[in-house]
Length: 117
Length: 116
Image (cartoon, chains in turn purple, red):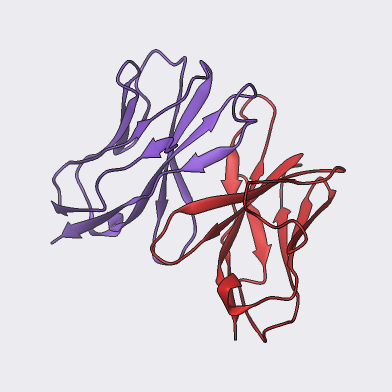
């Protein structure tokens, strides 16, 4: 069963505007972590932001913020003031707790973001 | 931040040969390392979880005799693709878990394997 779902294969955004990349997840474990990674054409995985299942507030890291809606099991990434260098593949990932996932991190299918000048 | 290296970054080999990929955590000890493969335009698929001093745990559908994993020390895990075939051509990425209070997972830069 799909545990991480990213429904947007590709997204376009105008430079300097904000964009939201969608991510929904499925788990029965009360303890889990949600991640967003950026993968440019070079292939390296760049960690962007983390949200723990017990965190009360939405995570923020600079221009990145995570819109965590626990009841809806969604963890959307918001990138503010988009830059041309933000063009890349973005992956949502989930790490389940020991009970169900053994601390493994699994990834969604990814969303390719194109920033237009 | 923590750094994870992989070697080689790119390898081209003939069909039937074996290829070893190294994954090192450079400034922390990683009791657990993970190996992923990524086909073009696809997501990362977890292949196996490597624990220092014990046998790796493979995901369903991954042949353990084909993809040999050795985690001999707290800073080194190796993936050996045995008798490689063209369908094994892929991007292989390792990651290392720091454990402890932060318990963060850092990724290596990846190894692109091309089997001719």
